[in-house]
Length: 275
Image (cartoon, rainbow, N blue to C red; front, side, top):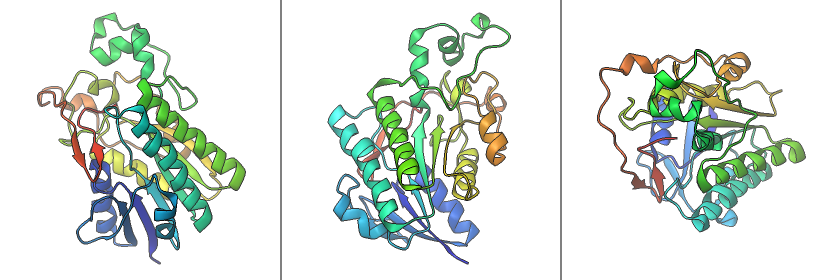
């Protein structure tokens, strides 16, 4: 049986990865909710900040993968319009349409602010391993320490997810996505703590899409197997059997030079730096 999947922000990096995998699997009927047309895919061109313009796209869909967002470059007005109001609209349209599952792309930025306090977490991201003890306390899916206003906007999205799940029994899984590079490999010191490979990104989204029906709400931190990570992925492993295929240390001698440019696509932003 074909499962109908609507992806917001399909033109972004992660949207492209998920689209390619679901097309390979062949058992999914894909629709894009995007500000630009996606070649070969049924596309509803609309802005998620306008509920009335997107509601019809959700009718008849089984699963929603919510990837559309503006990132750290955005000002507060943009963050409010897209990451908060837009996310509310996606959840509301999902509720009205009676979809079976929403996968909400949150961000490691919901906890990354801890590096601003200095100490171990900053040393881990800066690659100052001589300053790091043999063991350290991991940040979990229950923790919040937002990195800038972008992190605040993603926290708000998770709060909205909790509200819609509690109030309307809308099944939602938040994925706090780590650093995903267009190149697929680490490019800066921080990546050896927060790296998330392309195939581990796709695996995480597929697991969330196909989570058991009795999981009404969850939040998972998502990275690859990173020796110097402070983000605890054990909860994801235990709950949905997340099994990262990539180890960031395998790239130690092959990493590219840093790439910090961010490229606009589809009206939103592809993150070339990562969080």
